[in-house]
Length: 164
Image (cartoon, rainbow, N blue to C red; front, side, top):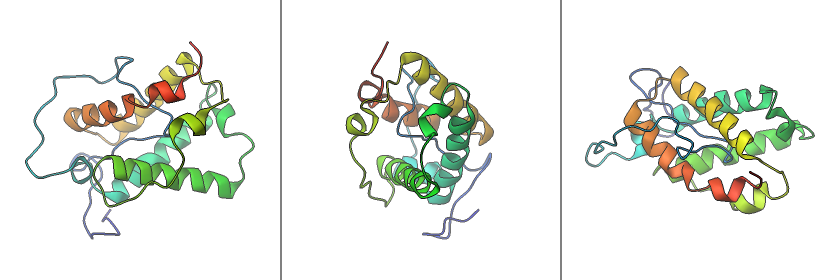
């Protein structure tokens, strides 16, 4: 699917959808997907190597769908209006786009503020990482890009997990 902003983009084996997620998500700290890091191609941002905006949006949609239907994590999506869920999705896409070197701006609040009081546990985090891994597997995200993405996302874990 072409990137609506640049006319380029890929999804699938040739293209890497990148993960995501609910800003909440991820940690390589938990041991998912770590491998030997490789040097990225000169001049290509992670955003570009992941396939651009449309690839990030597709992966985000799949990931949020998994979170919202996961028996352990669906409680975090209860009570949101359809409009609110669309806003959460767009903020997540923009955050991921900006964090990977894309042309987007994240205008949302910081992760500590967003997740304060939700009582997210280490078990919730681990389950989220499993869901993200399944999404990345579905889109055949290569190891190098997956590791770079997880490295970015791991940094936000302390702001999200409130309980052991």
